[in-house]
Length: 130
Image 1 (cartoon, rainbow, N blue to C red):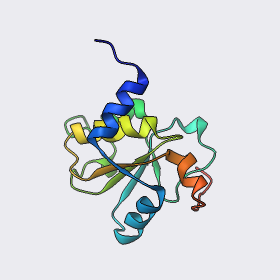
Image 2: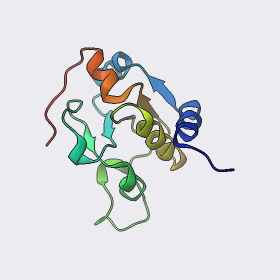
Image 3: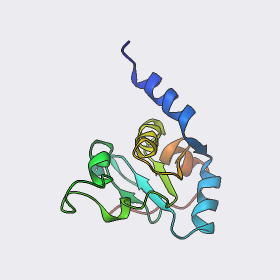
């Protein structure tokens, strides 16, 4: 049976930990090794969570793969045990990205509820993306 984007997001959210923006920020502060992955296309990013890396959703499984050549992967996405928090614009793509990483063997992956909209609405700091 075919699924809609909303159904895919709902299923993904049920399978990954969903953090409030404040909880995500607290985890980042508590563990400096926490990797924040923004899965939006780089052209659509006007602000970002400080320190987040940008890996668009479409290339996330390639960049996180452990069997592809290092020329196409991202070394920051090779440690399956590091804490990873995924974000996007409003939360939908973050849910899909977090589930994808979980399916790829990441053991400590979560997402920011509401994505950057939620982060900004909570009054948390942002930076200009590179």
